[in-house]
Image (cartoon, rainbow, N blue to C red; front, side, top):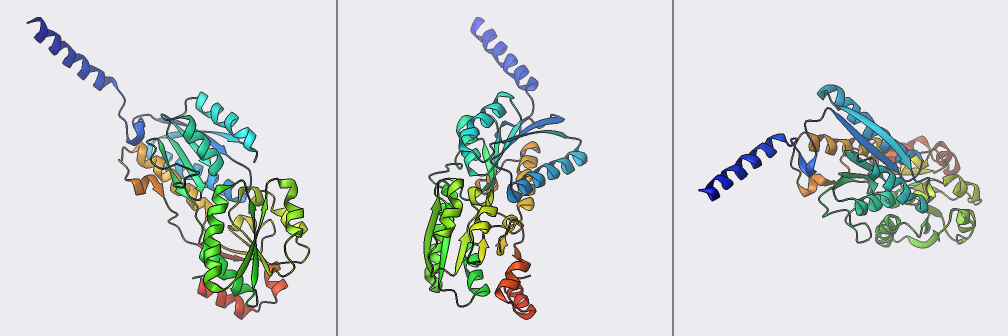
Length: 327
């Protein structure tokens, strides 16, 4: 009889505990809270990452007004310095937020490795499944990839300068996401018979010297979505004394002096990342494809007036390039 009474008491206590626990969505997210704290860690300040940040916050604020939820955002930045990343990550974790948003690969890797309980969102990460990233397969990690249409970006070099025979790849040797993109770019160059050379930097102070070391027979420079170069695009422009066409990985670099790109919208990418948060709060169970998403928005072609003037492109030529890429 004592055993039966003990079993019944255990069942009652378990039921009572369950009823007291908050309702949780995917990833252990409390779906019944009215207010959520979100720590945002951004690797550096430049147009693309700023746009992803803006899109994320705006989308959550919009949904919050519709659903009666409130989001409190706290911003942290590593200032583009690897040595600052863990300080920012540890500070975010110490506040026990409901979510952490990481913007760019270095901070995403650090945050994912530092907590297994707080939901970590990433955006502006090129290849989350890469061996160097390892962001997939973790129960508390979700996000969106900013993989660009690299094949089309390489084709764009020939569209702008049909006589081009060789391109110089300029990127940071410290960023695995850049290496991933360059390997894709190499394959595309091989397909269309475009020669290439690699020019890598390990320190921002070496950017100008590296640009000036580009071979005399190079006809253009290609820059992937590289955080180091993007944050210092002005240094590239200043050192580009031969006025080589600068085809870049994303449109944010155009405002800094890049010539042309076919790019995703980072603001849309940020909004897409926010939609994952909304799904979690709404209690939805996400598939692997929904947990780690590729970009779903439209691509945008951007050719600067400087490029049009320097290359002597006619309106008809520009219109033809735009038509090729669906503009």
